[in-house]
Image 1 (cartoon, rainbow, N blue to C red):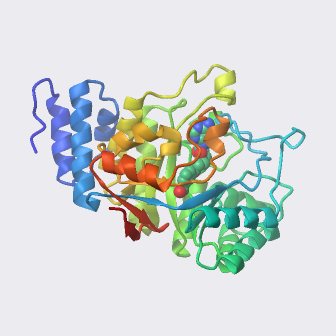
Image 2: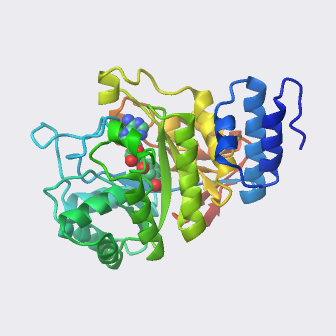
Image 3: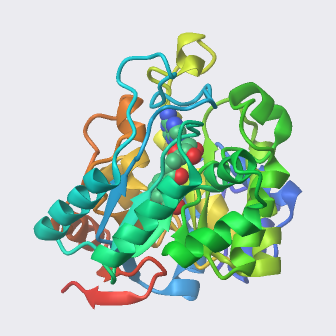
Length: 375
Ligand code: V47
């Protein structure tokens, strides 16, 4: 493919030519791509990323039938980007009982035959390790076929510390109780200077990566995320993505990459006027495209419609994304930060969006095996 169109910067075209040949792209090249502003360049970036997507995973766009459950919102982390958490003293703090969780799953199973439950919560010191184990055991007992994707690296690290156990011990216990996969949350931006400003009480970058490495070695596969659109620079985004690429080279344990577009409403970053608005759609598309280009050892790049919005997520399918997340059920985290229209999705809705993008919709398992192609 020739990216040498008029108005096209020859350095950029040379990077895109190399990317299209699936060559490894460096930090400097990645930053140059992330900083593109000319509309022609951005279209060409999308074409390059889309071409790589086609070579790597073809035209199927998958999603999973799933339910998100947030077992607690009471959190000692108090991240500046989060509108979901409550302090211990606040009204509205909750911890779901195991029975409430089972009821939620039962209801979701009646509505659509979900194959995955995605469980994340908060850093709540009142909760014992046995509670997490009970959730896993009871779901496994009552819904033996359901894939359990639960607890971010941040939660695992917190639970291990609180219980004076190692991360490996906690993960082994949870795996025995029924844990199959881990979600990619809590990564935020893997740069400790930025973390000190937006999530000072959370685990450090290397700790997040170490939990993931330990999980992967125990054959607990996971996703990886990146929260962008707050105070990070293009370089921070690229170095984050490259850290994931390096760990993937070591473990091959990441199933997919999910960029998370920051929603400021109601967060401290918003109240303190540090971040005034969400990033633009163009920025969202660039993040998807650059991720696809840099992450040459990841198969799946997800357009998370909950945070991007459904229509932009559809466009992202032309910028390198090949997955549409899932039906979700009832999302809470982005909803708390002002994204009020995007809490759940129907199968037909996702199917139409994917078809409308000229792709083949398919329902998948948590680890991206195709269950059904939707004609
Ligand atoms: O870790 C919190 C982010 C994450 C906001 O692995 C926010 O399959 C935007 O990780 N605006 C949780 N983002 C969500 C998550 C996830 C979602 C879907 C699928 C998977 C998966 C993982 O949401 C947090 C944080 O990075 N977040 N607040 C906000 N205001």
